[in-house]
Amino acid sequence: MNSIGSQPRASADTEEEKPFVAKRIPLFERFRTNVFVEYCWAPTFYHRLHPLTKLVLFMVLSLASAFYSDIVFLAVLGLVLVVLAKVVKVPWFWFSIPLFVIFAQTLTFGPLSFTMWRSELYTHYPQDILKITLIPVTGPGFPVFGELRLTIGSLLWLSSLWLRVFAGIAAGLVLFFTTSPAEVASWLSTIGAPAFVSFIIMAGFRFISYIQRKIVLIMQAQSLRGVIFASRNPAKVIRSFAPISIPLMRNMLSMTDEVTIATQIRAFDTRRKVSPYRPLKLTLKDKIIIVTSVAVGLVGFYLLLNYGIGSL
Image 1 (spheres, rainbow, N blue to C red):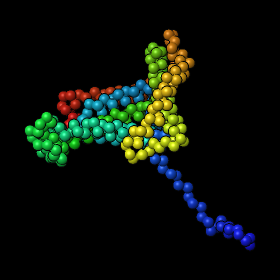
Image 2 (tube, rainbow, N blue to C red):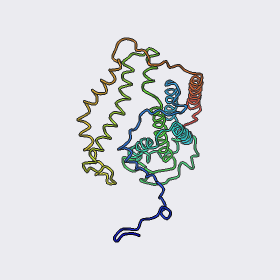
Image 3 (cartoon, helix red, strand yellow):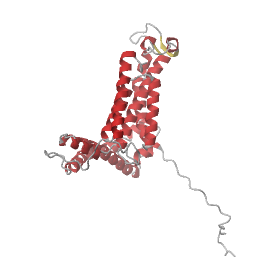
Image 4 (cartoon, helix red, strand yellow):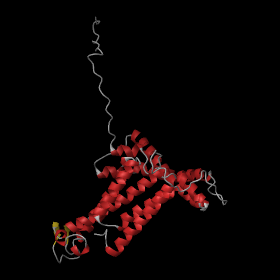
């Protein structure tokens, strides 16, 4: 019997436990708590490849995204890179980087697309479809700018720019996530590269992640002081950069010295030949991937230059 004033106690049979539901972290919170573009080991086949193999694949994929302009080819290339990023376990929020670059590119090159309406600029798509006007802006003979309009062809050109940026940055994200800076430095030492080259690579990789962690700490400290970074007002977002940039600039010189000292401790400033910490040899799988990727890349560029396959 319950005493007076006490609350009835729920029995274990009548009270059901609520299942735990993980809350989704907003994308902006990822910027405040995570580091982008940093090597992270994972038990995947791509991580076990030789650094040279991953570098060759990156060069072939990035050059293909730079020279090809056909949206069908670029869409397939982007899909392949997304699947590869999923296999090697690249964090999904890393892809906010190419999306942000695409947004900035749209603000920059978006107005230029209104001048790309001439169907003669495109050779591999039906001219009648490319001439269809979506948004007319100015007529023929308009002073200074001439005729401006958004057509299917100009929209095709703008989409090609988007896919190029996405594919190129996605290839870089896969490379940075799966390639250890220590393995790169070890491989450079194996082939007899100068020590300062390994020093530059190690310092660059280390500084990128180091400065990101410093930004995360500054944002967390400023948030405790009441600074609100997430806002839909562009003016407030721009003003919120000041509490980050000012402390970051003050610590920039000290961060440079810390990273330099940390890398010099590993004797990268010596003039003697640096021995690798472990031998790295190309396996049969690495050799097959290198030869195949280079051959496919050369054939693709030959078809592009001589037959225009892969261009708009």
